[in-house]
Length: 346
Image 1: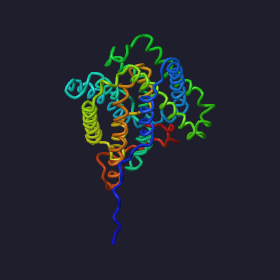
Image 2 (image 1 turned 120 degrees about the vertical axis):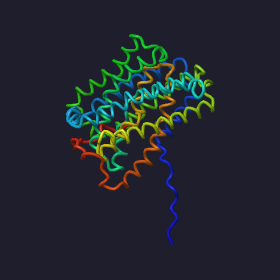
Image 3 (image 1 turned 180 degrees about the horizontal axis):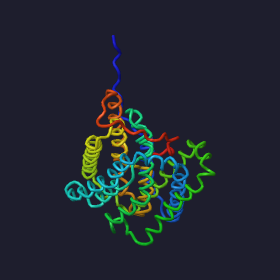
Image 4 (image 1 turned 180 degrees about the vertical axis):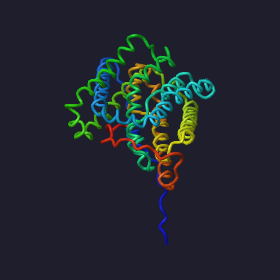
């Protein structure tokens, strides 16, 4: 007799549980007064160090080599920074029926952040897609997001993001762009060290993001903004995000087919073009929204877990596709990237 197999459980990301635990800690013990100032200063330093590591990990030569597969990367960038924001703007029509104005602002910010790297690579590999292309696409998206996301936020969110003044622009440059450029310039000397200690520095990455989350949600608790989110509104947000993810998964898959990409490239486009990075989005929200960051990052945190669960199922199914199932010309081989640009929560 065959053994009955237990149904596989949805992939619950352990890091999401840590994030939720951090939110719970902020709710029970929010930082106030002097402690809040200290935590805020530590969070600012952590964000700068985070983007310094991003710069030190990204191989400039591999990124430039990846431009040979430019059609794929342009498609992913268009999905990430054009199609997603247009859908976010369209969701404005759901206010106040399903979403409140602050939740819509958070949803719109979610559509502006860059794509993931680590999870896009992992799912592309499981589905037997073009892994080198997924590495380059995720790297390009993260690099572009450092500049494009703040610009889009300033244009589309306006004063709702806590005020996009000259001071805000200066903060973005000092906390995000300058550390990233410094990491790139020093990569020649510290790149080997970063690669050898990837796991340990990955823990620093995630610890920094947890600190950012604690700072943002502590400020939200002190200001009492959580009274604005009822269970009904939260359910409405989840429903809207489920539709958003479904639309992007369909557009990236069938759109890539219409553009005559091969199967392996279509897989890379679907996973890189339909996902949003928690690791990049949380620090950016902290800089852009300041004390209002807690509500701004809530949609991103929920979307991140949703995309992991859904994409894991899709990747497993794609892995069983016939090898000869190719639409259009065979995919151009992207350059073999050395290693993932580092461990990220994605």
